[in-house]
Amino acid sequence: MKQDEIKKTIIDNVSECAGSAAGAVAGGLIGAAIGGPEGAAAGSVAATAIEHMFQTMGCEIKKRTLAPLEEQRVGTVYAKAKELIEEKIAQRKTPRNDIFFDKDSSSRPASEELLEGTLLAAQKEHEEKKTVYLARLYANILFHPEISRPTANHLVKLAEQLTYRQIAILNNIATMQFARTLNPPINPLKKSAYESVSGTENVAIAAEIFDLYRMSILGSSQVILDAGGINPSTLTVVGYGAHLYNLMDLDSMEPDPELIEIQASIMLFLIGAKQRQ
Image 1 (tube, rainbow, N blue to C red):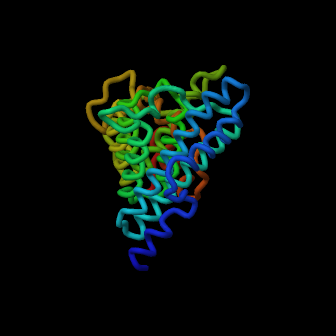
Image 2 (image 1 turned 120 degrees about the vertical axis):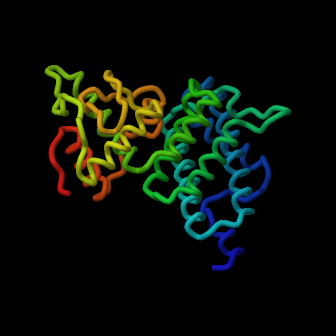
Image 3 (image 1 turned 90 degrees about the vertical axis):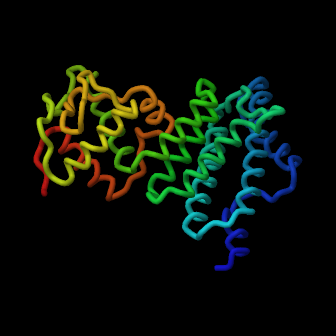
């Protein structure tokens, strides 16, 4: 496919570069869907900014030269993020009404900056199953005013660094963390630290858990000095990990046969069972 054709087909549903007028009209219609006069007024302003931002970035993307796989990944995240935002607004959820969408004399809006960062992360992401979670992260940040610009940028950077299996690890450990709060509590996890870890899968999972611990995404009531010193029963999702879990909607991961196998291996490590070599 020629580069000109790639640019034309990069994102099927991207708005034409027709300036802010069309965005203002569309934004007003979206904002009016938010319940109540106050919600409509605040939502209309934010929704107009969102429409204009997606137009701006859509036009910017179309100017760039991307390899076919990069085009696919960027287009997927762009379209999915836009779809999720529209779904939330249709559900009468109000976008954040703060300076996140404002442009000042020294910088462009945080929302636009973050969208570019998210799309750049998608462009370089070789694990394509991660792309939906990048889209979820971006879309949800636009509805959470407690997430500041610096925090939002850091979360995208952290998400970019995670492997698909580390995302699954967050899901598994958060699920077990919740299970421990039940009455009676459920905690089938290994109750003591590994003295050593053996087996290809276990070694890899231990290394990825330790990496999450060093990134302060996972915490433990016992200090972990290396990948071999993990006590699964003490692991919790903390700090930025909690933000990632919530904003990437990891309580509802995309169904996939490979994911089932990955999570089974993670659970075998967490309960201390032997895995196939």
